[in-house]
Image (cartoon, rainbow, N blue to C red):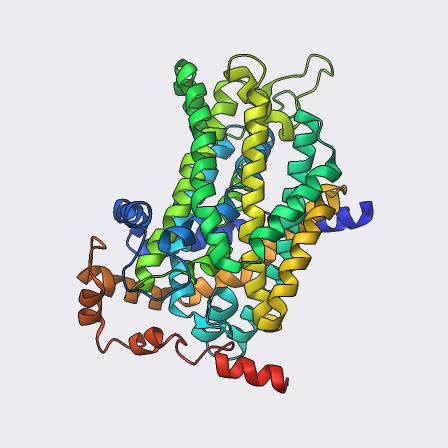
Length: 503
C-alpha cells in the first residue's frame, strides 16, 4: 500500500503540477471570463437573488428546485477542503496561497457557470423519468465525432472512480478521525452510524438528497461562518497585517515550513490553485451534474445560480478559514512539546481554539467538519450514480447507492493514505476532459448567454416572456422536449430496449 500511495502521489503531483492542470484551470477560467464579458462580476447579485431568495422557476421542468440543486452542489463541495485543504495550502505555500485560492475561485466562477449551463442545455431524461446530465453527456452531444465520445467516456470513468475516494472514503475517514480525537467516539461506531444515515438518504435519490441538503447545508455554513466571524471581530486589529501578508507573499512565496526557510512563488501558486479547485471544484464538471436536475426555465438561469456556489464556497467559507488561521497565528505555530510546526490537519482546530474563549474551539471545527464531510458524501453519491447510469444504465443506480453507503464504513475504519493520493489523481483526471470541452464549446456558450441576457438582464423574465424571445431559437424546442440535440442515451425507449436486449 505504501508503494501504491507513492505511485498515486507521484502521478498526482504531475497532474496538479505547474505545467499541466494549474495553467489549464487558470487559463480556461480567464478565457471564459473574457468570452462571457466578466459575467461572474456583473451578474453575481442577480444570480444570488434568483438562487437564494426566489429559489424556484414557476412552471419549469426538472426534479428539484434551483435552490435544492445549488445546495446539493454546495453539499458536495463544502467539505474537508474548506477546513483541512485551506490549512494545507497555507501551511505549505504560506499566506500567499490564500490569494491564489481567491483567484481560482473568481475565474473559476466563469467555468462553473459554463459547465452548469452545458449540463442543463444537454440534459436528457432517464428510464425513471429523472433528468440526467453533466460532462458525461454534454461532451459527447456538444462535440461531435470521436473526440466528444472519448472525452465523455473518460470523464464518466474518472468520476465514477473518484466518487468513492474524494466523495466517500476520505470524507468518512475525516469524520471518524476527528470524532475520535475530540470526543473519543470509536471509529467503528462512527462508521456504522454514518453508513445507516447515508443509506436512509441516498436510496431516495436526488429528491431525497435535495430535501436534506436544502435544510442542512445552509445551517452548517452559517454555523461555521458565524464562529469564524466572531474570531475575526475579536482579532480585527490583526486583519490588515494578515491581508498584507496574503497579497505580498502571493508574489514572493514565503512558507511556514522549515522555520521560514522560504519557498518559490510557484509553491504558493501550486498549492493555492490545487487546494482551491479541491474546495470549489470549478472546472471539474461535477456541479453540472446537480445543475442538470434543476427545475429551470432556461439553462442560463441555472448556470448563474450554480455559479454562486463557487462564490459561497471560496470567497466566503474558504476566506473565513484562511483569515482565522492567519490572524490567530496558527499558520506558523510551533508545538512547544515537539518543537515542530503543527500538522495541517490540526491547524484550523488550533486557530479556533486560539480565537474562541476556553478550550472548545476545536470542537467547533470538529462539528463543522462532520457536517461538511457528511454533506459531501450525499452530493458525491449523486454524481457517481449519474455516471454509473451513463456507463451501465439506470438498472445499476440502486445497487450503486447501496454499495456507496456501505463503502462509507470502510472509509471510517481504514487508514487511507493511498486513497487520498488516488482521489487527488482522479480529481485531476476528471477536470482534464471537462476543461478541454469547455474551451471547445466556449463559442456556443458565449453566444447563447449573450442572447438570453440581452432579453432578461436581471433574471426576472417569466416563463411566457422567455418563450416569446426564445421562439425559433436553434435547439430551443429540442431542449423543452427533454432529450436535447440528438436525443438522450438514456431516454425511456432506448433504456427499456437496452434492458431487454443489451448490445
